[in-house]
Image (cartoon, rainbow, N blue to C red):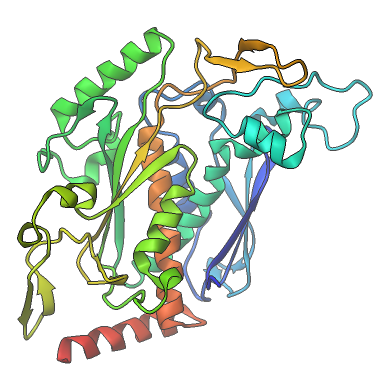
Length: 385
């Protein structure tokens, strides 16, 4: 059972997204402006669609915070959907006098068909609204809270795009520091690759197509000793993989060297262990990505995710009309051309939530001070062993 529990509600074109985050310690300094900063970052990226010009996401803290600090009670967050005013009849809670026209053609690559069959929906709108990536705004808001908590124990979380379509950043070829990654249109630290990525996205837009890619999330300063090898569901890598694969359109996950390790011999993969009196145990390399045997090593946690191309196309793929089973073109819904830069920000959020949950499970603490003290005591203990 999770120590830090998250529940979101709301539809893409409904009045609002609602999130409840339970388990955050008391006395954590928190403002809506800090949450809004990550919500704004989620809307960045060359290749985004028209909705990013409509929404200007703002989180309203409605519970669990008083006088700028968490109380230990569940934190309630609300993010309004500005576009909801244009969908009031379609999304009406009450039965409308004139029922809206149903959506009956599922889009390949979406949850449309599976959701309709699972929940016995006759109108795919009931699936589309909740399966939409719009829900990730609520998780980014809660991830900002987790980021603030992890910052109290010295953690820094950032991300960057390493591939879009067939354009890949040079390995280790970053020519700009991580601090300026949000200034780049595709959040890539390789300037030459960024230019090629933007050109590739533009070409995909011109032909009515979409693109996916790969992003990397890096967590610096996370303590060693979090996670476990004794049970599968307590392994830290499993928690991180589950978190990342919960993002819509993410189809692949790597930890550390990931799939590249399969092509190498053990002498080129495993990180040798060293010890210094002031530093304690450490690795000179980090091909494990900060996790060994299900437990954090104290080295930076490095994960990557592969995002498939967005499934809604301006030139739709073939599908089937569900009432007649006739072959037709898929339903077209407003969409982005490429959302990999935004997905990387969502990746930061879900990884922050997973790590905050794991750290609270390991160290406990009803207040931030108690939590931080427990982390420090353990860290000092490990250095002396």
